[in-house]
Length: 265
Image (tube, rainbow, N blue to C red; front, side, top):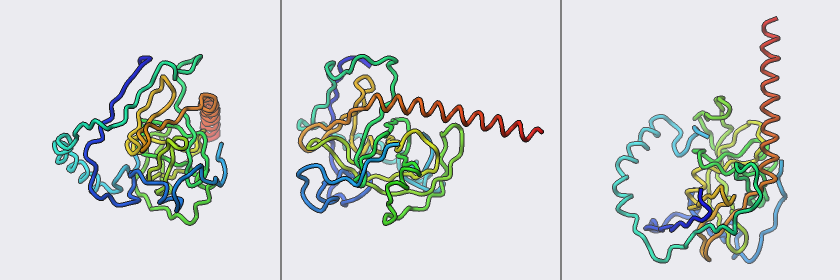
């Protein structure tokens, strides 16, 4: 990725009269906090510490219907996207690149606000087809009043394992800092897997926020009402997560070797 990039984001035609609170929709802070946003809302606390899954449909029949819909709407989507002159300009300058970074391959790990919790160790993974909330983090958030939807679709991609999700939940993550921040209502898959991260933000979040990633600058940017918001990665946290992931992987290998040894006796 080059030292200077510039992206023009075209808004296209917005859906008429979208229903408030629909997953993936940009929702105003007034609908979450009950009053107009003036500053940072009070936080309950700070929480520190992929393919598959029901991206939109949770049955084989529904997923086949989704594929058919994609074929039928491709042409219409291309026609409906019309460039506009008032779209915000999103760009990354050389001055935003933080030096030094060796090795130059850190994961994009950010901090977000979710259900009035400041959550660190959030991994932004554009290759993940779904947003993931890990079980330990979910338990710490104490969201007992928010029901989990049943999920029958299995999740693949975690060290080759097949994962049975605990359920699906709709939550409003907030990215950026006041006043250049944005909140969308999204669906998270809750899984009980040990992880160095608290949350994985995948394609659904990036699309909902219309976000642009720059791993060279270690940040993401997205359009907001007043201009362009951004979330800066924490390189120190990213490297700590990497070390923790290596430790977990080694423990897992040792446990499997020990298990195989005992079974052969």
